[in-house]
Amino acid sequence: MPNLLVEPELLATNLGQPKIFDVRWKLGDPDYGRRVYLEGHVPGAVFVDLDTDLSRPPGRDGRHPLPDPATFLATLGRLGIESDDEVVVYDDATGIVAARMWWMLRSIGHARVGLLDGGIQGWIEASLPIESGTVEPEPASYPGPIAFSGVVAIDDLEGRQLVDVRAAERYRGEFEPVDPRPGHIPGALNLPTTEAMAEGRFAGRRHLASVYGRLDDPVFSCGSGVNACHSALAMIAAGLPMPDIYIGSYSEWSRSDRRVATGPEPV
Image (cartoon, one colour):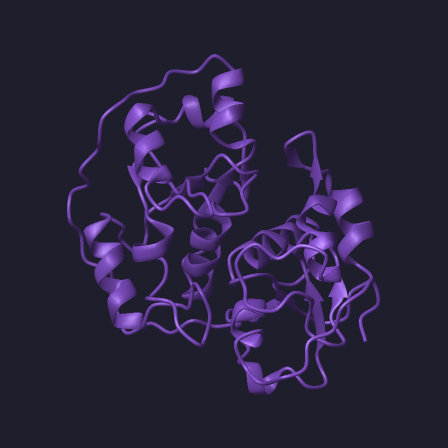
């Protein structure tokens, strides 16, 4: 414990061993995550806010830019995480939000972190216990300095295989709920996060390898550098190397003066 993908029943037999974090979040409803956490969560889980704990304030560099390393160190300490801790993260969105915390920990070299496969839904479906209210972690100290590895900036995308993991309709420019211009980054392939899933959980290793094994040293992109981390986890689950992430993603690109493409083709 923890495995990369943690089964609910396995976590239930090890409550109190890994430190568990609830990273539920919903676009357009900033209070959603804490609200549903207070209503019910995996016993012992601490709430983590995507907007304030795993990001710095939005701007031209995107909707969820990374916090500076010193701020993230302080956040880890406040959450009670130490460098040798086992960590499990979860959400209620097939892991596409919680994977951001998984990736950030992996990016700074914290290897002992897994994702609850199936999320809170899988936990409930397994008839496992739920507790309400809040859990206040014991403050800790995470050693520094740290730096995020595997991060690609907007000016370093040229010559890289960019893979956009958003839903196909957003990639094509048919639907854009939040960013200023619909479409995608020219040259980016589309490989939605749903390609990694089977009935709400990650597909088997053979399927994941068939999906992601054809990529060549990719850089994953999404709306704001969150869902891309889910695809990075899928690559690791397939037995492939950790890919790079363009954290600014389309939310940064669409706010710049760079050209935007529409339609089903990468160009």
